[in-house]
Length: 186
Image 1: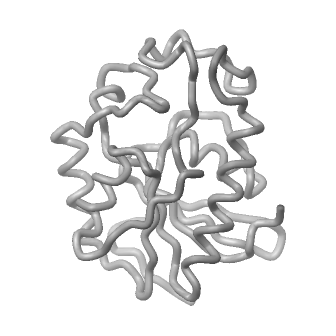
Image 2: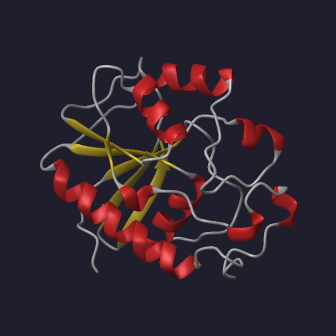
Image 3: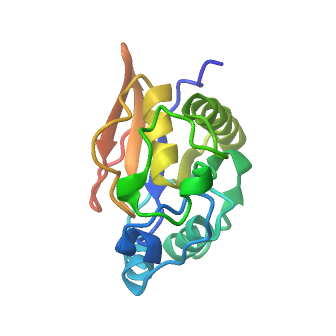
């Protein structure tokens, strides 16, 4: 599949109790902390370009973040933006997670997740029409999107509630962190 050559924004959900405790919560329904809710609410004051289309993972932490960040809009949930299923490692300390490229027992393979996220991104871009797709999802989804756009999946986890713009260039894709006072250009 070839990803449509259109910009999109990915935002990791707000901080959760599992993030705070260093616990793997892929498919587990972790809850936003008060700090996570506050950071999500802060995104509502950003000067977002128009038009935008909001999408999210169907998981509660992403849907709640989207609702707080974009209170006058409804995020369309897309199943493909769910976090990775870590199988038997769900609920365990992050320190015991297997390497990303290994399939966890009872969980989802990394290549399967990349393919799933690529299909979900293509759908969101298509469903957005002329609007900028803004997607609230998870760390693993952002890492998979990096691979789909020619980047790397290693390094630290993406920061919670930090918008990342993925934009096509003449030679591939560029990922950049957005700032509250971002100047939007066509």
